[in-house]
Length: 125
Image (tube, rainbow, N blue to C red; front, side):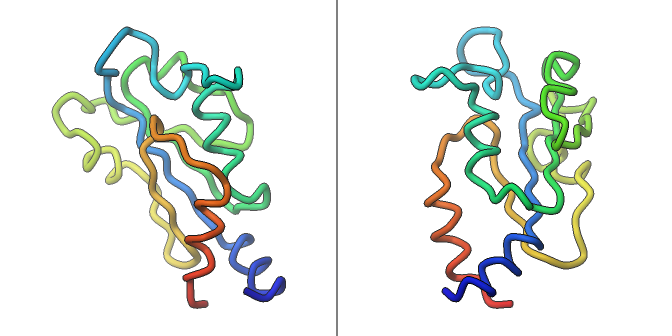
């Protein structure tokens, strides 16, 4: 992929993290759990995307007040009905872009930046 194309794509990226649900084990929100490297899951995920991504949203519900304002470059939206609506209800709370590249991810799934880069290589703009 050409660097100019890569730059154009990264400047048009929007990311939505779905993180409203309760964890299967324990009480700590999965996005706030520490990884083996000592960072939190949400930190890891944010580092997977280009720093100049236009918009990063986190849709929360479970322990929402513990999550908000942990990252200044992340917009927090609340799904108050998360127990009834699940991830699809959370996605409906998101502000979906009309243009650009959209990634939607669960907030408790770890992946590296090379995964995002590989996906970006297959985007036609």
